[in-house]
Length: 170
Image (tube, rainbow, N blue to C red; front, side, top):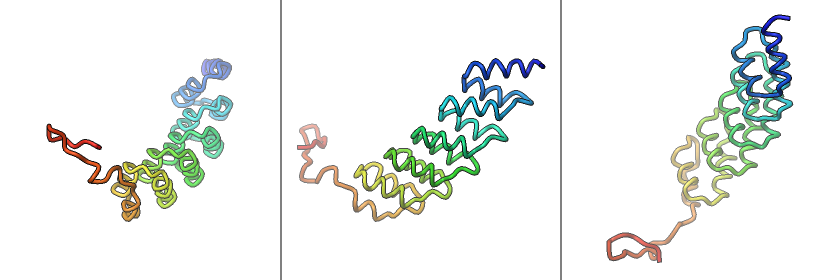
């Protein structure tokens, strides 16, 4: 048994997904399948994403399934953005289901083949005027008419000017 094999055995026995990732990434001849299995067993979506993004020869679908199962909208967004061969629809569905408006905005902005309409629907349904405005202004393919659906934060008659000349709500 060579030194790399002994070290890999120690890494696998440790059960540490970070060590598995580092070993797979930086050690020539590492057993990628065994190290990937450790990451899968850990259930850690961060290392599933990192493995899929940076390690050649991994099973993208199995690692993606781990990310989807985790329910982590940030990892879903990053996986869709960075991993060639990712199932964009499955990852987007996770982001939509999570209701995370920031990740929905980023997904629409950064992920090729994102379903802009589904992400826009989530943002509009939220009623959040900030995200609706950002979506309408920043997302290519967004329906600019959604700004009309933006709830008013306040009406002009609700604004008064105080003695210092600053606007205040009644």
